[in-house]
Length: 129
Image: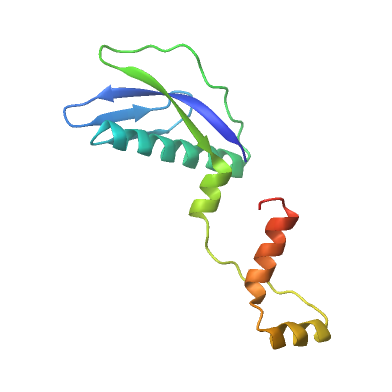
């Protein structure tokens, strides 16, 4: 997972803005206001690129030339697929593991939350803290 920047073409519509990323198939969105369209553009870009990563699809290079219609404009949108994944995939996953009985007894006596301890240890091990 990585950080990306892609050009998005914004088109002013009768109501709001439509946004398309020509470099990424099926990557488009819209918003009632420019602020909303920018927010939605970042979200759809992160979703699309995260899906590409997950599926092992080749991620195309961002283009730098644009065929704009009258009134269109280009804005570069950045996203972080790792951050997107953390923010949107917080579903709990059950894991079965084994620890020595004496360690279990000591942890229970201390009132430790096993799930939280494991999460903290994994984050530290993966250098996410």
